[in-house]
Length: 521
Image 1 (cartoon, one colour):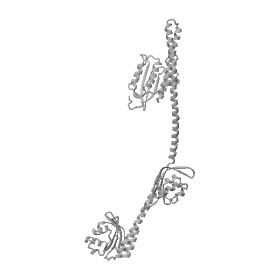
Image 2 (tube, one colour):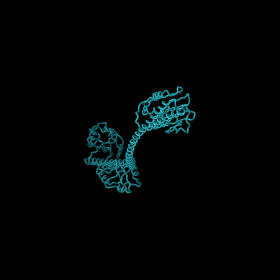
Image 3 (tube, helix red, strand yellow):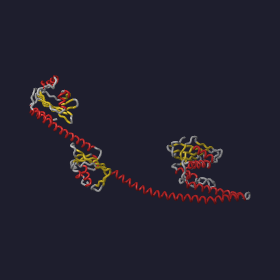
Image 4 (cartoon, rainbow, N blue to C red):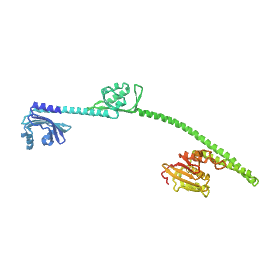
């Protein structure tokens, strides 16, 4: 360091020394960076600290200045040390140690190549030069450390991804991050300018926060509004804290700010939407309540109508049966046909009423969900149906086990299988029932080799009251497939028809499984 080099030269010239050197203790060694020499060799380098000898080293560690007039005659030095000193041209010396916090850290050495009777004034002068030089060096190093810290801090502030700015005690900019410039749309150089000049709209409340932090406080907020001159509002998350100089006094403040305007606006929008949703939910709940009331009224109406209609129908049917029995053998063929037609129409009307009642209740009646073995369900359905002995009904050997509404699935299969039997015009009728797992649902199919259905009628067969058979067939109400379609779609599935005239028909429908962990083929 130049300060030490200059001090060594001036002191050496003034005292008339052959060598003056400052050294620093670094672990087990002491290091001489530069030395002043006049008629002696330079000693810059690193040496073992033990080379001072035990007595000299002990004196240095206690902070005592050591002066030796004649190395050859000094009883504190061994012959080997005397020889070593002579080898580097030391005949007399003054050693002044620097002890900090009880530790020997550095020193000043003054050498002459011959013996020298040091005067007390020379020793005192050497001690004063050493003390002042070390004090200056420490101050310069401290200032350098502060500058280095400030430079690092400035670099940190500049490159930090957050909006951050550093100010002195007069609220002048010392540094800022690039994000600070971007968030506040600043384009000109603001270093050295007052924060209040850059942002003249800053309210007094913020200035008070700055003063509080310059007094040592730390303040922050997770959400705060900031009104600009143009009337716009920024929402900020911020923190203000002081930074300190080496001596411990406050040097200024650092402001960390995050512009959360977009997030706050989104939050406000979400709150507004939530309020609207609450209002909408309330309206929907009111509508649902009215709908439940209407459904209950409809249930009562359907039940009443069906009961009131079925009662006279049963009476007509019974009355016609009694008349036919009373007049047995007395009716001609035409009258007998008319009586049978009357009974057939009554049965068809009753079937129509039952179908309407079933159709109206789909999706409005709570049905228990249970574990259903589809293979066993199909066996039960087939056992309950009447079909010609010449018919073949094939059921896939491995059917899934579902956790579902058994009653509804049973209605779907019953209607599809009954239709496949009822409308098959062949003596060798064949029906195939299969299942195929597709992800979270199953696809079932009921296929027959009957007369088939023309493509233009595929949608029509699912419409209520629509039938491709004549009305003289009592069972043809035109409601069965409508019930099937409504059940499947209410349960979240889909049904399609694949058919052509003369090629049979295949009904495919999907059916979900509430819990498919235990389902299997």
